[in-house]
Length: 357
Picture 1 (cartoon, rainbow, N blue to C red):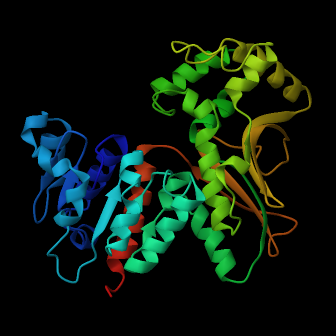
Picture 2 (cartoon, rainbow, N blue to C red):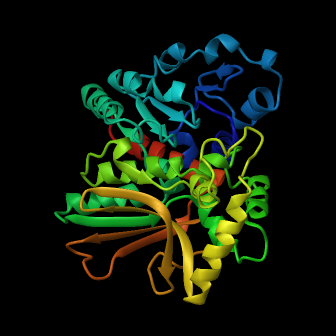
């Protein structure tokens, strides 16, 4: 396992809770690393990892093992067992190694969107490497924190259905913000609350820019058979929308020390007031239809399948031959370390339970 941040720690907690059970016995953690160091053994104890690698000082770990080039060697000598790397990071450097590991016959399970959600070339390299190495790429946690979004899209296609359109609330942080925003409190204050609660990225501008949602709709679109490039997704950044509304240059209006530009409060207050007057809801929606993908703030009628929601819920609507008039709707928690960790380990268990080739 690589990464011992919030998600990595949740993976360790889940593994510790499985100790002595068939689930726990089916997975042997042999290597755990973060940016400071790594630990290696025939079977590592999750509690020991937290004490030594997460909570301890860097000198307590063998920092030489943190080198990514040596991770594959940590999985050597395990006989016919499946070799699995769980990437619990958000690191582009780690994602750069996914294809190489897959080509070596090592399965990769990840929540990082930088593999499948950036360039078409990188996505193709991952698929080609998986085929070459006869390995699996577990990506359930890349969209929806482990909700069965990708699985349902793939299962529909495998069953002969044709997907015509998808639309969804794909950001747990933005879902929380718009589920809680009522126009009484400045939107920027609500963003700060979400940041303190751990719902947003450390820098909330990553959420408000729409770039995270861009990667998610790309992953979903490509799974649905639409080979979009990143540049083909039209993204309406809430940050740019706010400063443009105030008549400012989107780039020049954002200083390094300004987490959320002040114009966003006036913009959201006006949009919320206009939506409420119609009995409608504001939602940040990603759409794929007729080969075109968009990410933007929308005003939805209260009866729309994506209008309702609670907490950090993600919600995806799928229109297909089978679900032409009334879409298939999948909803559930779309943010949080625990549900993301569960998604990672679900993929790892599916691989572990399959028969090694």
